[in-house]
Length: 459
Length: 96
Image (cartoon, rainbow over all chains, first blue to last red; front, top):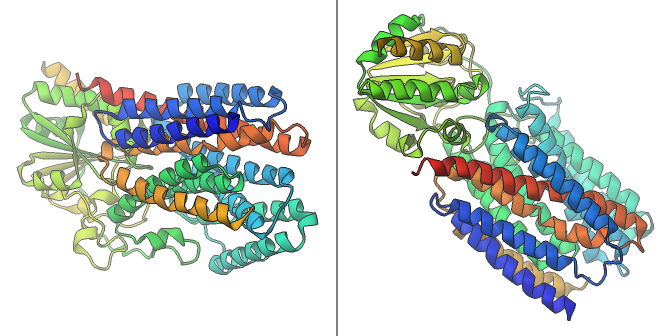
């Protein structure tokens, strides 16, 4: 009887997850969607407490309390600029959970057969890859480890060998069930190594793709754990997450003009060409903040292109302040958001929302480019590759074909930049050398502060 | 574990994947991050499996592994939902 009740609650939870995700994808209903999905989760947890196999609740309540406390603490504490790390970390924990569920399930199965071992191996492999891959992604995003691509010599062979060993060990599981736990631990370690190596080989700027993909993996890991514990709710929920992760991955890949396979098997192919055409195309023309102010003061249409540099400088609040002064001066300000600007999908949107900038002011790539002719001043804040005209004009360029924001078509462009260093792709940006472009060197936040200060004096 | 169960679960998997694609095919870029963290919270559903295992104290080793899984999944669930809510309420207040 209890099991029927539990199944019915799971059915309701499934319904709430589906509805929640549907609503989460629309701005008007997103808050409600998230709440419904959380209610679904809460119901499922309460129902599971009635599971008859449970002998003691001590560990369960201890775990729920401990996990909730930590989860609450980090969710309150994290800054909006730290959101990519947070998402990476949470992905990894989901994967880790599937890994341990897979391992634990072997202890309680009375009649393990071949199918069982395949399912368990799958849960352990995906869980472990997600855990270590996310951990490396977290390290790169938090700048605990260098965000440059790191490839071992002959990495594709090493990766292929690791995959082969994993498959052999999976076969061994059913052949030698007596040492299954040792074999599974070996599988977990090798899969973990594979996850580490594949994310190590990916550069910081490709992180939006990696995070989306790991998001998808965390769903697949839940799915696998669902097979291992024969729980359909886990399978449905995991599959929904897996699908949403793949959709985001796809959007990110399109925005970078790289095929999904290139990302999925990044460890197997040499990563993208980093040979740079280093010839300088002239000299960049610097501008002082005073002169930049004069340019902005006369502008009627301003388009701001934020990038990862804005997040690093924590300049989003200063951006809002300048925007307000510009608007008070009778100027119309819009923001052009490239899908892969920043380190995760929607990174810029989150930061600008935190600074209280209305999302009606944010334009996506196509809309921004459609209005470009009318723009008096374009301000590039810490963005580089997403405004690199080589992606459009130079078929030799490694990023050729990637859709960009055509900010160079604005009448004047101000580029706020720390120095003349290259973007993550390590390629020269000819935008900086165009006649209508002026470089405002320095920390983006203090440059913006100076500009806002001048407007303040004006008023 | 019998093949019939696996096939039934595979049916569910197949339908759920297609449903997922249909549900989230057109999401505005503003919601990309909340969608990711919100769906990530859902992936913490492994919590249910972990709970059952952590309660099987007749298998102490399973209970320990289950407990670890339970803590990880709970952080994922609670942290994921809360941080999503925090982000969404920032988007929200501009509507007024």
